[in-house]
Amino acid sequence: MHEDQAAALRRMVNRPGWHRQTSPQPERRSRTIAVCSGKGGVGKSNVALNMSILLSAGGNRVALVDADMGLANLDVLIDVEILGDLSHVVAGTKRLDEIVVDLFCGVQLVAGASGLVRLTNLSEFQRIRLLDELSQLERDNEFILVDCAAGIGPDVLQFAAGADMVLVVTTPEPTAITDAYALIKVLTRRGFDGQISVLINQVDSRQEARATYQRIADVARRFLSVRVFDAGYVTEDPKVRQAVRRRESLVLAYPQCPASRCMAELVNKLSPNGALVGRKDGFFRRVVGLFS
Image 1 (cartoon, rainbow, N blue to C red):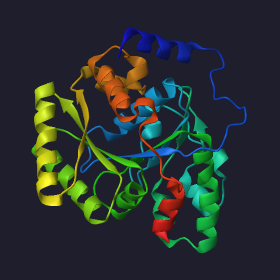
Image 2: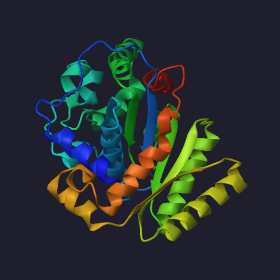
Image 3: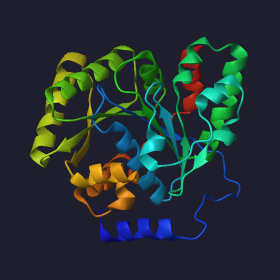
Image 4: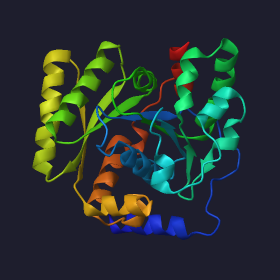
C-alpha cells in the first residue's frame, strides 16, 4: 500500500462524524464477491473484512455479509456490537435496517447466524419478504462481499452460485490446495458461470504463491476445462495475528505492513475502474431463488 493510501485510511478514521452519505442515490447494480475457502483456518474472513474496508476507502459503498451458518465471526474480528442477525430477518422479528451495523470504516455489516440454514425451508411469503429486505443492500451499495462458510456445504454453494465472482482463499499447504480445488470442481460442475479467482494466503514469497496458484490453475484447466484467475497473494505477516488479537482490521491498524500492501494489490486487481461487472438480476434474488 502506498504512503498516500495509508494516509487516506488514517484521515477517514480520524474524520469527525465519518459516516455514509444520506443523499439520494441512483439505483445501481451491485457487484458481488463471494469469499470462500475449501477448508477453515486459511484467513478467509480476514481477507473479506480487509477487502471491504479498502473498497470503501476507494470511494465505494460496500456491504459485508457474514454468511457463515455455524461459525460467524466477523463481528469478533472488528470488535463491534451486533444488534441482530439474518436469522431475525428470516423469523420476521427484525427488519434488515435494524440489524445492519454501519462500521466506522464506512462498511455496512450484516451479521450471520446458524438460524440462516432455515432458508431451505422458507415459505413463498417468507422468501418474498426476505428478498425485499435484502435487496435494500443492493440499492445502497456498489459492492457486496459475502463471507461464506468454509468447505463445500450446500449453503456455501448456493451463496457462491449467486455471486458475480468467487474468490477462493487458500494457503500453500497441500490439504488447503486439495480442498480449494474440490470447491472449484463442485462449483464448476454445478454450472457456475461467473469468474473464479484464487488468492494464496500466508505465503513466504512471491515464488511460492505463483507456484501454488499455477498448480491449481493447471489442474482446473486440464480436468475441468475452466480458467481460474490469479488474484494474487498475501504474505505471512506477524501483524495479521496482532490485528486479530487487538480485534482491529489489518489495513487500519497496520496500513504499511507487507500483508496490507498485498491486500491493496488484491483490491486493485479485482476491481480496476469497476471492471468486475454485476449481472442484470440482483444477487439476493438469485440466492433466494436457489433456496426455493
